Image (cartoon, rainbow, N blue to C red; front, top):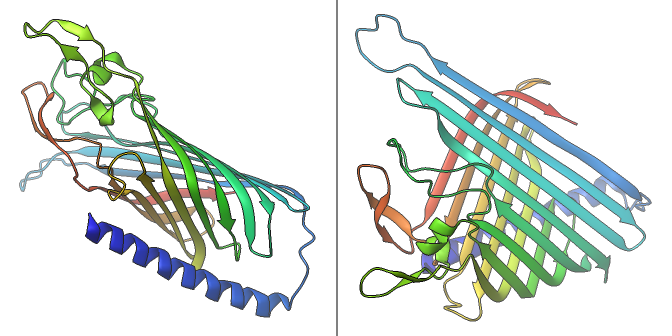
Length: 322
């Protein structure tokens, strides 16, 4: 965990340095022009990536496969005087079919953030933030056997976070939100998963004969400190880099075990409608059990804590920005 924390802090320092460089370049270009923009600013990006493998009398062997991944990123900002209100919604869904197997989910994301700020000084805002993360459909351990139970659902888990602090915004490319007062609620809105103690909630209790005494709790509350770093910039012509890093420390239980969520997206534009994207997501949560063994139906039989989760998605396909 110490290594992860050091890496994350190192990356945050680098992003801050890059942002300051970007701000300096922007000042030279604008030559101290005054920002008079106010009102709504809206936009977004839609990306769809498709892939297919078809085999006919292929002596070397293999399996036919189909996959599709869709991404939708929307933003809506309102600025008036010293007030700034920023809203973001990121949706992603991916599915794949290989050979005779059923379609399986490869990506599923719902991430909404709303941040309100009042300017305190040149680059600082008094700010409050709300964030909700979950998924849209059931998730399973694959390969999935008939009758296997889902290991995740909509709002199982869901993560609701509310924070009050300061927002540092030296440029349009970089922001750093720092909050010493943050409430985080983990939601497991499914009785079976809650009874199993999934995603860190308190599991069900049973007597010595296996009779259920109390169901597992469907929520888990934490209070601590939170930091969010966001960087978005075109690092070269037609190549954009976006990075979002969330850190949370629970004051009430093992504050040294910092929850980490680090997302990176590199987008390379071929032309107006064709693009390639590489996205990664690193997660670490000391309260989440990771399945290491499962039975014939795909249900977990052994889990361990404190494992780093990592996801990488590479796609080439249709992209439209508005």
